[in-house]
Amino acid sequence: MRRPHVLALLLLLFAVLTAMGGPIDRATMERIHAEVRTPHKVGVVIQPPAGKKVDCPNVFRHNGRWWMVYIQLESDPVGYTTQLAVSDNLVDWKPLGTILPQGPAGSWDACNAAGGLALFDTEWGGGNGIGQHEGRYWISYLSGKVPGYETPPLSISLAHTDDPTRAKSWEKLPAPVLNPHDTDARPWETYVLYKSHIIRDPARTLGAPFVMFYNAKAEGGSEKIGLALSHDLRTWKRHLADPVIENSAPDAKRSTISGDPQVVRIGDLWVMFYFGAFWKPGAFDTFAASRDLVHWTKWDGPDLIAPSAEWDAQYAHKPWLLKHEGVVYHFYCAVDKRDNRTIALATSKPVRP
Image (cartoon, rainbow, N blue to C red; front, top):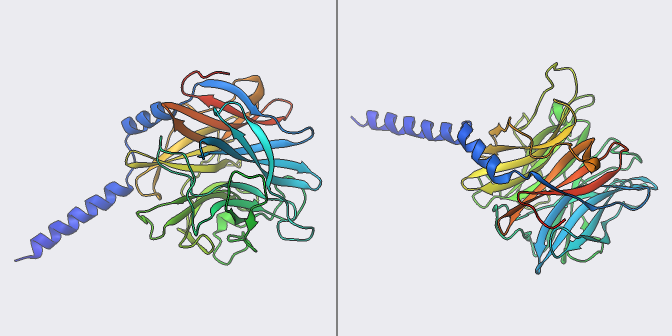
């Protein structure tokens, strides 16, 4: 006599699970776009030193001031370091120096240490700070030992500090936490691992408190975004066989990029800002939304940022968005026609240039 009730419960459970992983409706995606769009381009906020390039801004608030972690392409050896800058108004920035240098000659990260914030406050319009684990602040970084611009192989590791506002070297973990040659690396990520972004999920939606999104590719393939899970920030396990975000060119022959994810929480949805390239002209910033961190509905409307100004005429990409006092600030990497690479800002409302 109780079997119909059991069946009804199973059907209800199935409906709930389906709704959790189902696509986000168009009206909701349009509301997210209206909330995060930044049509007012302020301009370049960080110029690189002569002969170098800057990239991948990450901005947070700490002790009443604003701080930016960003990467710099060095010339000897060619490869990345991670830098720190400070601001009191999110527009005027002062570079302070290196917080993640290249490793010693011969080490596994001798030519690359390109870091991004971990445990940023995902609450949209919240405190915009960064959290701690074991009393330390953390960044994840891509690394490699071969000189050149993102020369394979590149892996992912982490570093930590007791004070994220000092221009001093953060303490690196001794080895990569994810490597393209790991035995559990999926076929689409066996060549290069790129930018990573780690969030804390208190609800443990996927069974672990720490979730890493990162873009990677196979040799000759497209960059796609996958995820990994951890309980301690040191040991990571890849989650799912397939990427969670990928985009293909219309002719399906050209390699594309879906990369540099940043994940925030807007209302009851997760929103991922990321950049796209080559499935349509140029490089641009866009977003996707999810209920469960696994199934993502991609926005197919107007780009959040696209080339339109002298300083970003070639590429406008690699997003970092935050909301403060009713204004959305969208930091991004701007590349002009002469291949100068700077960090620029766009906002939802006009601010002082």
